[in-house]
Image (cartoon, one colour):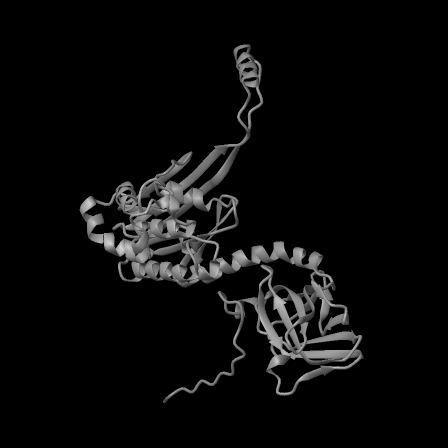
Length: 410
């Protein structure tokens, strides 16, 4: 029996600025005289959405900004009502939608724990019993009797998250809370969420933009696209469709933004060309996953540069370097003499997933002073044929260059 049922749910909003008194009066006059007035078309934040969730399921909700994710959570938390359709939720809900939104600046941390706990429906006796754990998890023992208007923003969200996750409920509705605080607190937050999921068996709906993080937590995902449910299924397949959508948008950006210009240039050398062993198509330079990638770089040095460190890297559509190689790992130093040199890098069995990438290059002297550096110097597209695409594992950024041996025991 589903614990959550969403049936043909649509949520509409009226867009546009408020009208002036003059315009309002004029429109009223037109109504009274039977004349038509200009009506603004409503915006559908959600459009005929259907799904159900069983008790104990952990479901991620993903999509680009404006897809309707937060709107859906607010409907499920009964913060707002659908324009049409119905939602049935069976059990007590703990909404973690705006962490720390109910905190009052003039009150101390202690007072806010009791106030915010009451807002979330926690009995005073239960708050008292959990008080020390809430404070310890938020790491605010020294500041608990200080007005929270003197807290940093990070301290406030830590307190809000700690209070909200102390609610004893059947269903957790979570919006971006895994991004609260610094890195160490984010790890604690993920640990607490995993404990609530694995050890307490709660039903969880969680929205996030860190798709890989959600894959770790959620076996099932919903992909929203322009207010409609585009796909509901296993997290690896849903996230792949999401990344494919993102790739289509970012490939053109990478292609247009690529240029052989440095971000750092001491004019001690020139990078004259970068070439790749590949074919060219509409997406620029294209290679096949797990094939060898050969990059040749021609440079011209205006003087001798000894003990040079050369780094080559590939950055993805989010402009994050996902793979690098460096001459610093070689046993012998690299000395570049005056004049032209050719640098060849062979990457055997390139193991990045299909998508657009940009080639980055950096050259440093013996003291690791940057001499020449640039990102997205040349666009590179890793592509796979439609018939081979299903053979590649989903939910990853890279593949292991593995050798397999399977021996069956008789």
